[in-house]
Length: 368
Ligand code: XIL
Image 1 (cartoon, helix red, strand yellow):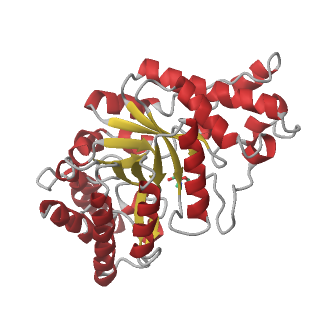
Image 2 (cartoon, rainbow, N blue to C red):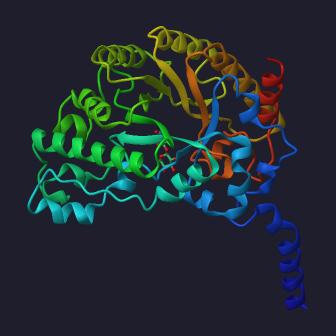
C-alpha cells in the first residue's frame, strides 16, 4: 500500500511538477511567447538584459526562449577572475616569470557560444575586482602562503590578465562582448576614499587608473569601458565615484558608469536615486543599469504591489536618461535563483511566472 502511494506521488510529480520546472529547474513559463517581450518593448530606449549562469544556459529548454525577453547577457560569475584565472598554469609559469598570467575560458564559453549563436550581446563582468579574485593572484609564485608580490609585478600581472582576456574574447567572439566592467566596487562605503583591498595593498590607490589604461590599450575598437559600483545614491560614496569618473574621463580611458542597483522597497528613496542619476549623467558619460533587483521581505500581494511600484519608479528614471543609457539588466531571471532569493527581488517568481513588477513594466513601456 505504501509502495503504491509512493508510485502515485512519483507519477503526479512526473506529470505535473516536472514539466513546469523544465530540465534545469527554470520553468518554461518565463519564455512563454504569449507574454509581451520586455526586450521589444524597451527596444527604442535601451537594451534589456539579465545576468545568467552557465547552468541555466546549458539547459536546452531555457535557452530556446531566452532571446525572447532579453537582448543582452552578463555572466553571473563565469567571467570573473576567480573563473578565468588558471592558477595551476600560473604557478608553472611563475617558476620562470612572476609576471606571467594564464587564463582559461571553459566556464565562460557556453555563455559566449550561446550569445554568439543567438545574436545576443554580452556585457563583460569583470576585469578588476577585490572580490571573487583569488588571494593567490597577489602572491609570489601564485602560492597563498607566500608574501605579496611587488607593485611592479602586480601591475604586470594586471596588464597581462587584462590583455589575455580582452584579446582572447575579441579574437574568438568578435563583436559579441560590447562592453566591459573594467573595475568593480573600488569605492568605500561610508567614508571618503577607496576601499582597502589586495589591490590597494599591493598596487596602491592608482590601481583603478592603471586598470583602465590597460583596458583601453587592449580593448577592441568600440568596446565600451565601464566603472561599476553599488550604493551610488549615498554620500560620501557618490562624490568619490564622481571624482573618480572625472579623473578617468580626463585620461580618456572610461566610457561610462554602471549603476548596480541592488535595491529594496524604500531603500534607497527614489528621490536619492534620481539625484544620483542626475549627478553622474551630467558628466556626459554613457550609463548602464548593470545589476538591478528590488528586495521585499515577504512575497505577499501587498509587498509584490509595492515592489511593482518601485520597479515602475526606477524605470521612469531610466527612461528619462534613455539617450545615455546603453542597457538595463536585471541580476537574474527567477526569484529562486537570485543571489538574494530570500528577498524575492526579480521580475519572475520562483515558479517562473511573471510577477506584478513584470506587468507594471509592460504597462509602463506600452504607455510611452
Ligand atoms: C554575485 C553572484 O550573483 C553570486 O552568484 C555570487 O555568489 C556573488 O556575486 N555585485 C556584483 C556581482 O558585481 O558580481 C555580484 O554577483 C553581486 C554584487
